[in-house]
Image 1 (cartoon, rainbow, N blue to C red):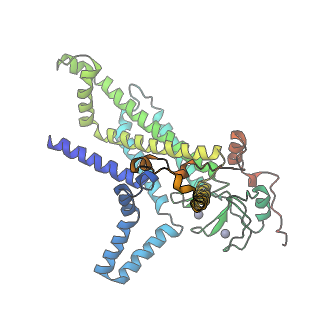
Image 2 (cartoon, rainbow, N blue to C red):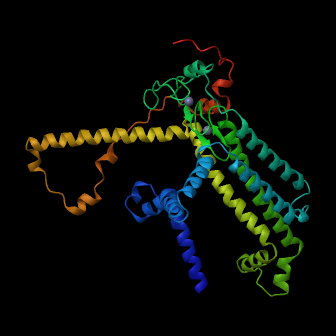
Length: 391
Ligand SMILES: [Zn+2]
Ligand SMILES: [Zn+2]
């Protein structure tokens, strides 16, 4: 009984930490302990750690920690690339070591020994392609083409010059401070790829997510079929029903089969759970990016739109309060009925009623948006770099 309580507590704490970390900044959690946990996880914990290092080891050690942080987070570095390669090769090694001896099996033919290797190799190739491809660097010689390919919408993008590169900043581009370059149709800087995701490699990035989702799904299903094959070959159901006298129904057999699997094939079960979780995460991430591509928005632009919408709401708020002030001066407020505390609590904030229209001029319908990702402007024949015109 105690173990069950411990497990339940562990599950609740994990859930709380995950929710706080991912959703802690949502408006509904404002001022709650969830927001405080989020602050602690994302900022406070590191701050306490730095203060602890300073107090115990002195300022020299703090500077060392800060320079490690600078190298890991603010400079291009291959740490996450190495971790990706380690994860995929170690996982494949464990799958091969634990499951290849049962292939060919009852449900899987021998060809899966080779197709699995091929699938992993293609995955690594897509990873290398995304990592080492040009994301669409804006240079002095190509900036005029980019400027005409990406017009300013004068909402979230206005005419500007990059203060570092000293060239005009085309709409939808951003200067990546880690790579120190301007990137066209900038999406985000990907630490795993050690590269920016921009105009020219968003297609490879999407292919990477989709391929790795299918890779994890393939692994999960294949290991599942290996275990199902073992169940059949070893005649486990027959043994359980005839020798142990267990009723031949899925409901009464299931716990015994699960127990047998966990005892005899725990490595394979662990691998299956790991691959299934990664597949789910990849599916969510791919879905999010596919939606962005089909609406012709970038991750960078979602932040810009959010800023724009907040600004519009603030404008509305100021206008509303000015109007209220004017009304109270003219004596109209004396006729307003007092609102009870409870009514005021449940009443929607007037700001929620403000409809801010997101007018994305780059959204040209699913087909054209998709085409723009697969065949970026800078790869088309009409986009031939010429010398930058003066002025
Ligand atoms: Zn720049
Ligand atoms: Zn970058």
